[in-house]
Image: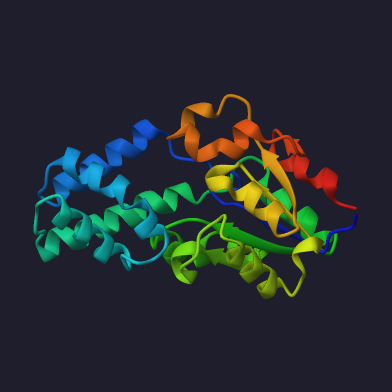
Length: 232
């Protein structure tokens, strides 16, 4: 069936996923910067993932302040400002297209597809997104922290479809299977495709988070550019 739109996941799909080791080191550095135990800061940070990605903790400074307070500290304004800049700098380095991402986006654009993005993420991503090289290629970027909904909630898929002016049945969704995103896409009528790159399992923080990647029996690809074979 000809699709009118393609909707991409972000981390692990259009851009690389940060490895657990690197992520833990960054959190420890933030905890130290904010004057709290790095271990407690990391524990509180991981516990609050849903709050961050649903947007209930606010922007980057508010997220850092709340996490530090829950870890038993009260960061000074200067330390909070420095930590916020550091976190945004790290996040900016993550938002680099992987492999042949840009060529893939261009191929879908040239074929007349509307292009959307669905990402479960916290405030640093929408803050930095407009300055990325991918932003101009994607007509409807939707970030969970902005809309207060997270994949696999059917409403977030419907939200991006409304932004593209297409029905879910006319969309293809492509992601690495985090947070049951493929199951969620299929449930609203999209054709879902798994991107599972061989050898990248070391980037998984928790196999339970990527159950779709482990259990998926539908269409799959092993490199982002392979998505273009679904162009009709």
